Image (cartoon, rainbow, N blue to C red):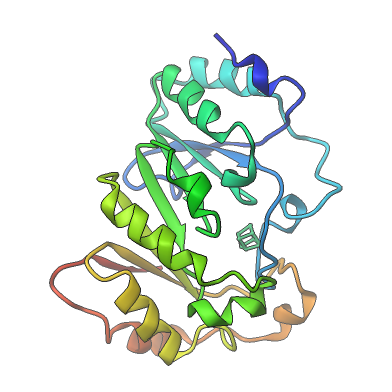
Amino acid sequence: MDAPAFEGCRFGLEKVSMNDYPGRPAAVLFIPGCNLRCPYCHNGPLVTPPFPENLVSFAEAAAYLRKRNKVLGGVCLSGGEPTLFPEIKALIEAVQDLGYPVKLDTNGLLPERLKPLRPDFIAMDVKTSPHKYRLLGTADGGRIRQSIEQIKASGIPHQFRTTVVPGITDEADLDAIAELTAGSPWVLHNFRNNRCLDPAFEHIPPLSDALFRKLCGRYTPDDRSLILR
Ligand code: SF4
């Protein structure tokens, strides 16, 4: 049964992605609206209104998911920031009721909304040191510590992710994030300077592949998987 609470809500739908659910081909439902303004964000159209017109209803997404259940191995709920959606708990359960494991992407800024959720996988972006979140449009960066601890203690499979962005994520920030997320899988991405929310970031060169790998190569403890992309 489709969730009536979602009538009138609209979502972005990527029908198949090989990169958004570890080890599974997955559909991605994008939930518009975000409480951060990361200047390098590639999802600008979903951060602030007006949102794109080609969004779909949950009923349309559910119809697609029912048809593709032999091909897809999961559904990723992404954004924007999915925990801002008032019905996020019911949305996760509605997708699970369709027979799909759900991966939730979050920036971790709302630990109290994250806590009651029971997705099958959580990926939290840890963008920089907590005190530097002002560069991303908030003074509440300290709240990410709480989300990190909650996720670690939740028993839910998870990973933390960091995009290495010149001027936002330097070596000291990576050291701080490594300490905060110790013991859990950590995925490091190199910044891409295309389609950025702040066009000024399109003129900032990313680290060379060699420098990125050298910088990240410092983090190789045995108790975690570290993936470079
Ligand atoms: S990168 Fe994520 S958290 Fe940052 S503005 Fe974009 S959607 Fe929001």
